Image (tube, rainbow, N blue to C red):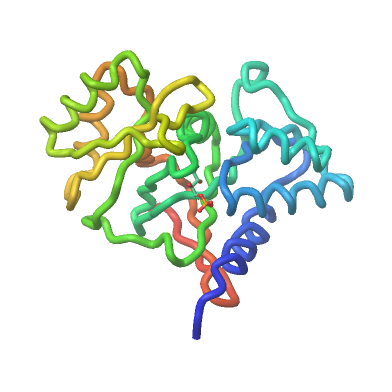
Length: 227
Ligand code: 5RP
């Protein structure tokens, strides 16, 4: 049976929004799966749900505004109750790779502030811990050559992400470097190493941030929780 990936994303989104209650501050993720959740939240707001939302990108902000979801400036709140976001890959240990859409910096800030981080994915996103990943890294342009050299020293091959024939520029005016580390055995150590390189603003390894991953699989959903 061929998989209907869009349906799986939608099912995961519908399941995740059940965790949103009234009077909450809600983080809104970025990407096609998060968009399904935003649409659901839009319907809930239309039906009386009273929340304030923090978008993780300009694209998400525009979508939320189109559904009249009330937005709040992140710097006016001390915490976010729940955030719902997608991922490019996840493991059963709830380690995520994010940044395919280039919004990882705000996504990581929101996930760090949020009390509950629900990740919604289709079944193609399930990966094994020692799998092969490309890790997106947000880099200030001034440091890009230095960062590429430092990444090389830790056995990564980095390429500046392009949009057409020009570097892709993030909302924070930075580059994204997609790094191929081949087989990664120790993601914690890799995260530590990347955090130690000056010029890297954020990287797409999200470790110990997700509370739950809800994966759509065929006609239902499966939840993976912190063990
Ligand atoms: C954006 C992200 C997205 O959550 C990730 O790329 C998944 O996107 P999609 O739901 O479209 O597959 O990290 O920075």
